[in-house]
Structures are given as structure tokens and as C-alpha cells.
Image 1 (tube, one colour):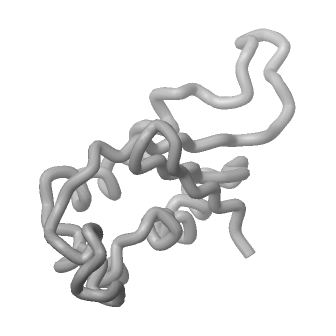
Image 2 (cartoon, rainbow, N blue to C red):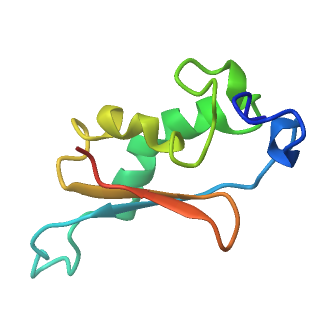
Length: 104
């Protein structure tokens, strides 16, 4: 629920989404391996954040008391030290609504 909206707004009521997260890295493609970074390594770094969000009431997670898509990439700062090639995090709450976070 988005607590800062008027009580009459539908998103003020408790509701849910199936969020989709995209993590983009930028760097030189390794000529031998044919990739910039192993997707398994990206997943390994993101997994602890995903485990804190999946099937939890987002409003109760510190930093997400107002869990808009714009506030969802809050974990970017936690990812960057472990993913130095991180360029952006995109969070989609529906197929037509997403926020792309590229840092400051």
C-alpha cells in the first residue's frame, strides 16, 4: 500500500504486484568467454536482496515504507560494491509501468 496517497486512491489500499527486476552491467566483452559477466554471478549478488522482498509485506521493510517502483531500487548501493560493472536497475510493477535507476 502507498500510505501517502489520498484514502480514496486504489493504491492506498493493500494490493500486490509481481515485480520484474532487470540488472544491467556495462563493460568490455571477454573475447574468449563471449560475455561481459556471468549471469550466475549477477544472480548470486542479487539473491540476498530478492529473498528480503519476495513474499513479504514491503511496507514493513526499512527503506520501503512507501514502496513505489521509484523507491524499489533502494538496494542499488548494496549491489554496486559487489557488481562494479553495474549500470542500472529497472523495476517493473506491471508490463506498462517501470522505473529505471542509474544512480546519482
